[in-house]
Image (cartoon, rainbow, N blue to C red):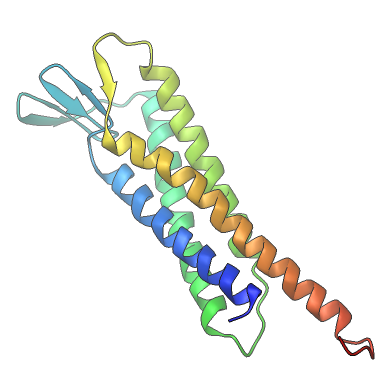
Amino acid sequence: MGVKRSLQTGGNLLNLLTSILTVLSTSTNYWIRQSGGHSGLWQECTHGICSNIPCQNTLAVTAACMVLSATFSIISLGMGMRIWYQEREPLRSQNTIVLLFLSGLLLMIALTGYTAKNAWKQEVFFSWSYFFGWLALPFSFLAGFCFLLADMIMQSTEAISGFPVCL
């Protein structure tokens, strides 16, 4: 397996991990823990009774960014798998790279906004759903860099393929 193929494999594995962590983080309601309950982006649970959270601007932006990030990550996973499986026909991975970096940027916006909103509250502790979002962030950027490097290798191979030089 060549370097390009290894980078594509690594990018796909990191992207799979990003997709799983982002979907888990977005869909669960353990973003913060407080005395007597916990809450997430969609519901607040107090003493075992869960109810929908009324619309708040910061929370709505966070939820929208998280949903978009998860969507972009899943779409780029499909695109990355297509690139990986079509080895004979070299496909460029520019769209996959853009979606992965955009997914990471949306994750950063969502998590930073949520942190700024809730970090100052007394007796509130961030929980595992929130940390899954932060854990997905570097994986998204690393997957994008893997595909970027694989694309650069493919470009350089195409550029020197016309020269009559034996390497």
